Length: 310
Image (cartoon, rainbow, N blue to C red; front, side, top):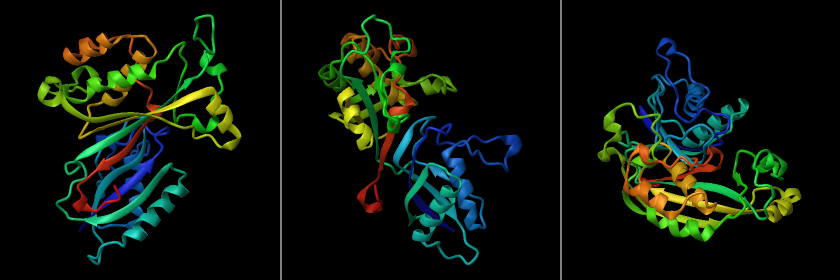
């Protein structure tokens, strides 16, 4: 038996999320609506003698993408030898491609059987891409259907969040982002839908440390025929957030708060109160979590001694 670390990327638009759902009544069937389920199905082509059980380093939800995530899996060959990692990568990609699945194995490597892709990760970096219309596309104060009237490059559909706002202040967002840096109880910024017990709402669980938040000018992914119009219509921005770990929907709620501030729907005092009075009741209803389409898991970080592609 050998353990393999798979470095993967995927477009999450068509998946319910990365994590598979286990149906106790149908344990033999795989959840092919998840990235994990599709990977396990692809791994069956190697016919290992053991049951295939992948382990995820990070969980992403429906519509969230990954540029570089990791999974580990134990595989046993009949002859006891390890699989060639180059062959492993190539065969998996060919199998996924045949099924027209937007998943790519970037590389694979043999790791010690004591290695755990989740517990040994020392950090994760998320990227949120959004674009703000340069000129107001409406003058009657009504937003209904206006977003559908605006030009959006087809290459960016489900890859970036396009924001229409009468006014937008990126410097205000940059200044407010500093409030999130460091150790905070992020209970207000955790979605309550997965709280299965009161212990999940305890500060011991909801305390997290944000290491970095970087806000930089972004760029359109549109091809040349659309790129000029896309750049003329929108200002593109990237928000990069790095921490050891995150709560459920924490990144999307932080970004949603910052975008609401930049659009003048809330003020700095609102963000301060949500941070300093940690409670699900402190969430301001004027803030909408940023849509999943603009969120990317960029990287799972390990110590250099592991010698991964991360």
